[in-house]
Image (cartoon, rainbow, N blue to C red; front, side, top):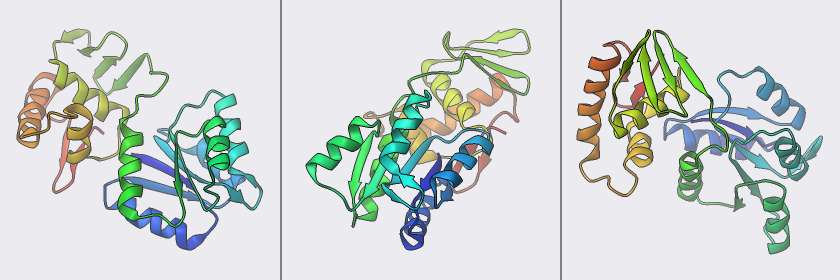
Length: 219
């Protein structure tokens, strides 16, 4: 996933970045609300999730969450803060955050909560995705190469859609397995390789690129 981190403490931001990069996530760090807004406007493709501190030099993380939701932005938000009282958790969640993790936190729990954010379906879906000669009609779950419709199985579609939405970014094998197979993951990595091979035969040999030791990417 591509994750925006809004955190003004450099040590915490560095810990979050190093921890999540181990899972194959790409991180962009902002120390102020203004910097975060600039990254949101300039970054393409859009961020998949945000990690937000509450106490910021130029504003409140809670207010920023409210502002994002008021503008219709649906990216999942995880709040990190030392202000972990029940009343504060309720306030943050009511402001539009999806999850809450108090400081100090365990790195393993942070990584797990970010993985959980990645499994949450977005509230809105793009109507279609154009990926070179391949076009995905998301709502209809149909794939085309040029004008020719190509039939995909349910799992082939889930893999193609996931990679397509993250185009240009490597998606780890473990994340694909978690999102596509969910609770039926026994032997899934071997099945994933087979399905990627089938996808290449259907959509083109160069459609999915393997990044050795990491995962797959659609360029």
